[in-house]
Image (tube, rainbow, N blue to C red; front, top):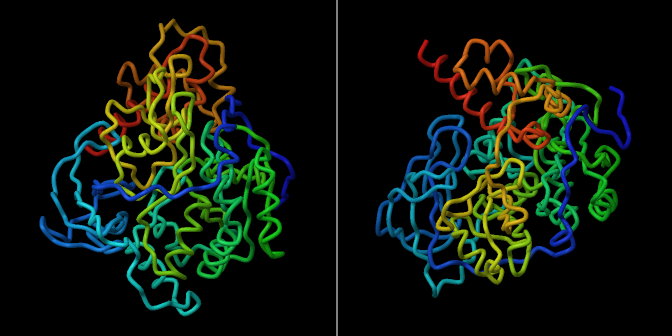
Length: 442
């Protein structure tokens, strides 16, 4: 494999970074809320199944829901308190979904119960996979894919390289940046744990070059078999297939997985969460969230208990300014705009983006496609986004599949560059759903 230096993938876009509000702000811990709302569906795959009932007392870190099948993961209490309800609550996706509601005990210290230390080296690969699933670990870059699924390496596959994504290419977000700058030893230890349990011979951490302090901190902590690779600043550099292209100069085939090239890709926050689990016995009950944008009074990087309402996080950051017009969970390219702030922080919530009238994403007057080809030049998957959008408009599910619509990972680069203001990625998202529905019915 030929490893390139300050490189990148082909195509992509360069949105303004807007990271100056929080890139130098250390991670803080926010106070525990009076109530947490823990949705059973906050990961890719089947929702988890409740293990508790209304009125039960639970302690911080206690498992409260079991996985439902292999592509599913457990859920844990993020606070010590009493189960108040198991009911439909508003989800970040915009629809009410089942959730476990816990009233926090105001008199409890909220410390984790002591657990017996486990030597990670004593665990077999199967035992580690089971522990990761039962601890509720998911990818913390935003997609929330169950981590144990990646760690389950089929017998016919071999892992040569463990790759960590430290790109954080979404504008505004800085939570991964601060994790790398403040916890470089834990990030390196996370790579080591994954390498040891997958048999990989080398580790790689790709970091965009706009994070020099993180690069320096990681290099100071890294041994010889873990390499820190500075990369060009470009979106969507953090997508795992783009990261592999940038670091190794190789492309994962359409419909394929990094494992086909002997690689496993994880987010830096996930690596630190793995260290917390295997070395301290702590499941995934909190995460670092960047709260930023021109319409928040005090931008911050916060450790937030899962289930804390977005409204409470915003209040802790001084509240929205008078100019606030929109709140987005995640980054501006792939995040979800919210119709209410009465939604909880979930495992995949990397950011709370507060926008004013100048920066809010509002529907604009759409004009006919002028066949300029900018979306084709921007697409990192070498698709024809304009054509896919047109096929989706007319419900051409067979043609959508023939044109590899399912290879789109909805980075929104196409919509970003479209001079006609066509919501291309939204049309493709609808088209992908159409293809999946037709395939399921056939």
